[in-house]
View 1 (cartoon, rainbow, N blue to C red):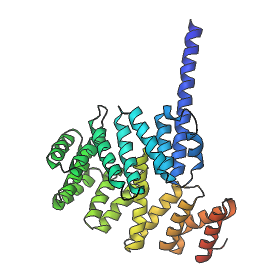
View 2: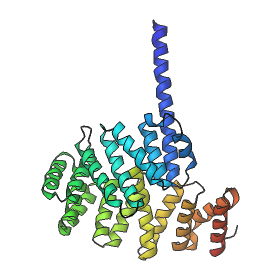
View 3: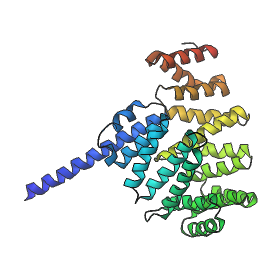
View 4: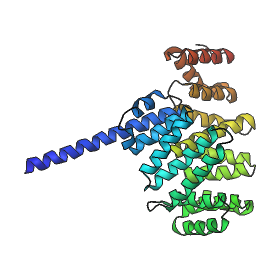
Length: 328
């Protein structure tokens, strides 16, 4: 009997370890997609059992999004939503994915997929497993749908139950109602309570960007950039966007170049793959940084030239090196 029980536990441990290994593979492939490398994801999603795993299903949707295959992304996402419909996180993922599809398709199809994103937000906040952050999505959806009374009511409920996400819900409401004076006070209170929080700083930065305060927006995007990157794809995307916007404001708006340099240092420390996408970050760093702050870009370009077997990438790196008079 004891031997049988031991075998049972060993079997369960093996299953758990196998699932953990698979989840780790999916996450690594997802990270690679953010750096412009698609091979790992392509290999994993070709597994016939991919649809049986929510992580693999998500990876498949992301792969088709990153490779601009909107039609296949739509099919995979639709199936994923149905199969895992009971989970709030499913609909949070779907909301961002439908919105991304809306960005990709032609102008005559955009409204359809933006509306799907809106409906996914409603479902995310209505699910039994909805965390406060998913209820914030539902409150935001009410505002987008013109139901301000419903947004106000749900925002008040969120505030009563979760201080941090309540602040984010209030910022959404302030922005939807153009109450920027109230929004500014909410932003200040949120930062005072959660000075280093990724979600607070990213949302506050978005608010300041909306009202045209680029310096404040850059300041809080930089704090978000410095924060540990969140796990979920839609949060990881916000992290990368935060870092990029800090640098873009430095480049295009000539606001605090030192902040832009710092943000790109963070990106190039996280992103090590030899890809076109990462080369673009290196090029932007070369553009805005002084000679003493270019080390990560120089090192990346040198690695591309010495190690990459992608001729197009190597040619682009050599061209960049020549343009900035780098010695390789």
